[in-house]
Image 1 (cartoon, rainbow, N blue to C red):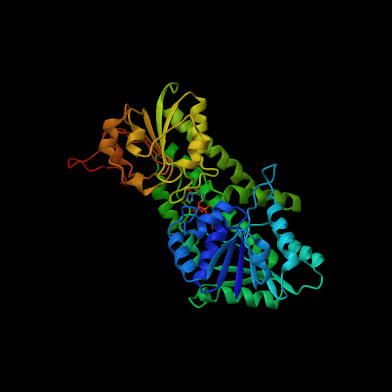
Image 2: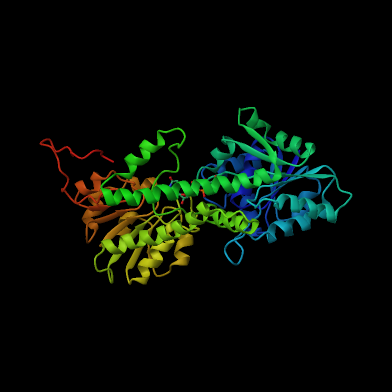
Length: 454
Ligand code: UDX
């Protein structure tokens, strides 16, 4: 079976590489010639653990190819995956389908009978059906099928998510589309991955609804964290206790500075706008979008408030990626925080293990440093914004010794509450009481008397 993947961004590349690992002959197409050159040379253009090695192995085995020519790559394809970008439209709400529609128009004239068009892009309900009608109109004689196959990959663990997913969703319209799509995912179904056959629209909505639900869950725990701060409770304990209830589950209950990335913000906006238009407004999703926006600003205000008089102070921002294990800064809370701090006349020094190239272009006024300790030299406060492991491993004593003021604001609850305070930091985190240096009530052996070490 020959498979073509149109769009070699994050989703397209991971899908192409993983499907070639299944043994299929795969051609990944992108109109960015420099990206294709890089891929041909065996280099992965994104930071995603595990992709580059798998890419090289499959290219070497002769079953993974790269091309800038969508038409040639689609001519003999048995299945064509569409994973082109679907950016937000100009009003920032709906999704712009120009690349998807453009690619369909480009390749339809050369498609062969029996081809299956598989839409991987996140699109609102009805999009795959519209594409089917577009192709029918252009080639009334062509025998083809469409499938909606939403992706649930997380950046940073995409290979694992592809190879061991909770489920594969196949929205189908006819038996041929179903059987080809099932054949492609057979290596996963043989390993007991649930392959869920659905209608085109069920598949499309399930993707938006899943992401919106997770975004809502994060937003919910963020608000509960605010309540914990007001009452002396501890969000880590509260979330742990909630998570023990299997109906709730323990994932996506880590309070923080708000969600970011390329999916949650865009997908919640698209779902809300689409649902409004469809006459079924999603009030919870609308609220989630508003609360998350406010959360990023409130996180910046938390830092500004902790500084006392902010003008002229120096703050070290550690972590700018929207989450750990990615170089992606799209809609990262760190961007809002940096912007708000700069507006207050605060000097910023910043570090991120992977995301500095993109971020430094955006904020040339920030002093970027390749080392977290260097970024903290003479700083009046250090702010931990991304949950990188390298920030968990910081030598807190060393950090305190090089800073002008021992103030740490941990927006990810990376550290145990008492540890930075033990070495002399005033430690402000999320949904937990502020820990002042050595102010904790202890028993005679020096053990903290209040509930948890978290
Ligand atoms: C998400 C979905 O999880 C994935 O299924 C979909 O295909 C693409 O969108 P991703 O954007 O890679 O994946 O990130 P994810 O790990 O879901 O995190 C999203 C945001 O929520 C990040 O900003 C993250 O820091 C935040 N988050 C997540 C929290 O603040 N707390 C949590 O407990 C979990």
